[in-house]
Figure 1 (cartoon, rainbow, N blue to C red):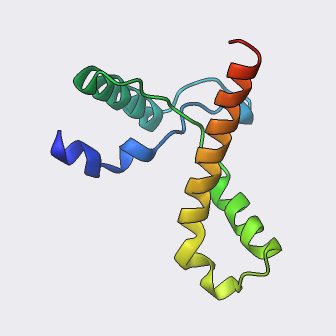
Figure 2 (cartoon, rainbow, N blue to C red):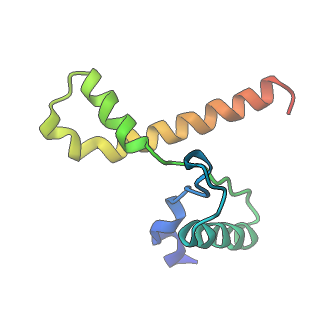
Length: 101
């Protein structure tokens, strides 16, 4: 279990290509889904998969709009992208609570 936390797949939330016109799940996404299912079994915790496509681009745009030096983007872009992913998840979860789902 210890090395499972180090695997990049733990943070890979891309599950399908529906936004690009196909609902076929790619091999990497299938591996992520299998890993998430196993992690859920091992921990007894709910595992939520989340689509993270385009968040790096959105993070760069956010940094640009905040007048952050372009040369310094590389140092923080993954942190900003992670915050955007978390915020979108929390917003969706809050919307589910508000609508009674």
